[in-house]
Length: 73
Image 1 (cartoon, rainbow, N blue to C red):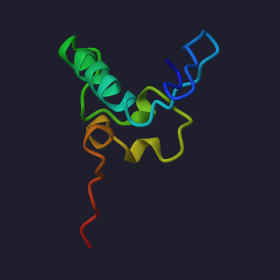
Image 2: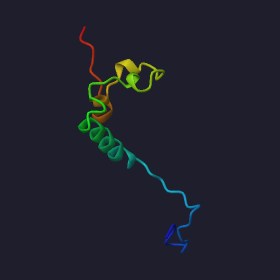
Image 3: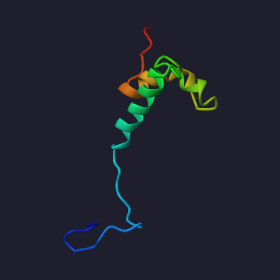
């Protein structure tokens, strides 16, 4: 049911909030590509998306850990 309280069934037009559920799927896809040797977690994002802003500073590892290496002054 799309709405149990009002007995509204799910249809092809039903919209669902996916929230953060895509993160584990994206991580699994990245790790599968690494396992197959098609990318490295140390590859910059710009290697695959050349025009991504500051993509040379973002590695796949950063996407998986939600962290970016901080510059030491």
